[in-house]
Length: 192
Ligand SMILES: [Zn+2]
Image (cartoon, rainbow, N blue to C red; front, top):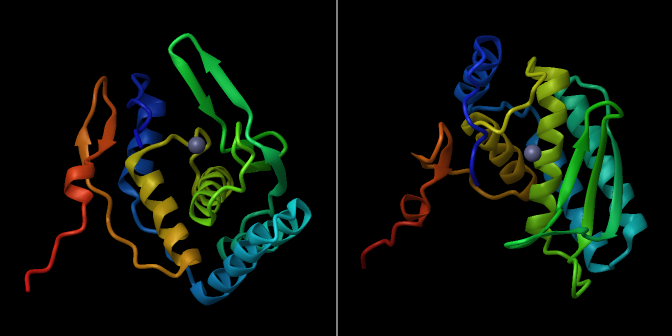
């Protein structure tokens, strides 16, 4: 997990900094989101793209109502597209189109075509919804990947998943970016 670089243009930098500082997201009714997420989990287990799409639609409709933003469209697709580079390849997990407010999420891996894990799928859905929320609800039209953006996504994800949220730990990366400090993020062992 790595942030976008802090922009050089002042107007964009101002938005970036505001997004970066906003780590909290208040969710008025977490139980409903959790219940709807469980339906996505069972849709994934049944391997039905149609059911996954309709349960994602219900979750996004509820989340949009909670945050008073228009409802985004959602499309659940089969195998992830593979992007091949000279140095390797990467899979596209999901994306968000600002003009049409369309969220796309892929539910199968690119090569083996296996159904993706619920955690990965839900985290992608929350990530793309947070782009929508940035633009339509929080006044961040450029929806930068800042530390705050990732924190807000994590709050939403853990609320949907019904798991406790832990603040992310960051360290400075290259060229005005921040990166997750995975060593610090490791759960501390309790001594017996
Ligand atoms: Zn993103």
